[in-house]
Image (cartoon, rainbow, N blue to C red):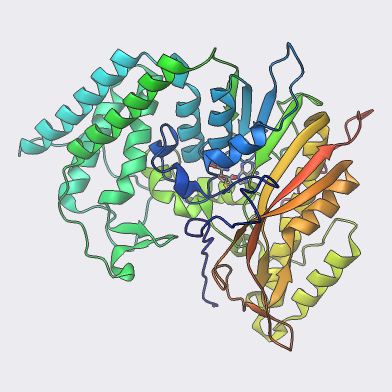
Length: 468
Ligand SMILES: C[S@@+](CC[C@H](N)C(=O)[O-])C[C@H]1O[C@@H](n2cnc3c(N)ncnc32)[C@H](O)[C@@H]1O
């Protein structure tokens, strides 16, 4: 089996002088910049936007007088776009299939309406409960580790696991679901930090990254500190925020046949889809999903994989040939060339990767069809996406996406290079040299800008997804 490397390297590259931040395009897109920022700091997320990047774009959205604009992030992650839209008092709508990301997103979108004294009281009571119960040697938690969760080594040390289970006991007894969700977000955001796993950047055992296992931690104190910071952010927001707009995240696929967002209703869409680099969001959030009770069994994880934009190489590699359903001669040629690579390696060679690339671009096309349906005429669409190299073949995903979008009536107005990534920092079993001459290819990230050119007479049907 080929070695799988899934670095997105979105997190460690400097802002590019001349390419962004010079008035020509949006600023730095990396989530790292969010880590110290109120609200965005609640949950670390490897593949998120920076809030300043979103602000740069929102500042350019044409706003008709007397109408509150609607901003959509159809692949909302932990909600950077939606939070920034809300900050401006604009309506925010999102889709997110990962229940952990959706939980974090929803908790942020509720920020204007929290009962802050009740949150502070619950936070304090949780921390005290965990501390007191874990000190009482005879105390036994009611909660048990999630049945369906398997890990190569125990996820938590025995002492830490006992504290986590007491935290789960406490949260299960909180009658108000909004408060319980707020506490769950804190537990989810901190849990990998006191586990025997870490992100490097995919979830892996600490020992594999040369780190010592964590045997002891004061989970109550960690939760207290996290929740205090979250409550401070709520306080700051409530003291300063503008009128609360409509804000909602749908825990469903943007590519599903039915769509809860009205056609021609979106003023700005800002998003970053999964890249063609096989970064496995469901796998990388397995601990959160299981320990927070958001999934119960491997079949729930399978469902998530199948619903994911582009699915995953592991999901489609072994099936029959996946046909590219889009009318783009250049892309057909590239995928045919990919399918031809390393035929002797079966699904681990070109066939498997071509199935993944075809699935990915079929979903890009569905994404464009749905987006064209929802945007208002003149609305602004910004999609941050990186190129990738699969089995030595470069896919300039930004340019491909722009071509697909044009077929659905979304006109590409610009492609800004927002980030140059480290050479070789991406993709699975791929060389960063392309072609026989060994031409070096730069891995980059672009913001593809599109506008909805005209009023659509009738919304075109978004083609259904095959079950492959
Ligand atoms: C690159 S992340 C977006 C990060 C976001 N911009 C932020 O700042 O938090 C892509 C997200 O798309 C979600 N996703 C994948 N397929 C989806 C689908 N079909 N519908 C909705 N969300 C999906 C993934 O779970 C992941 O959270």
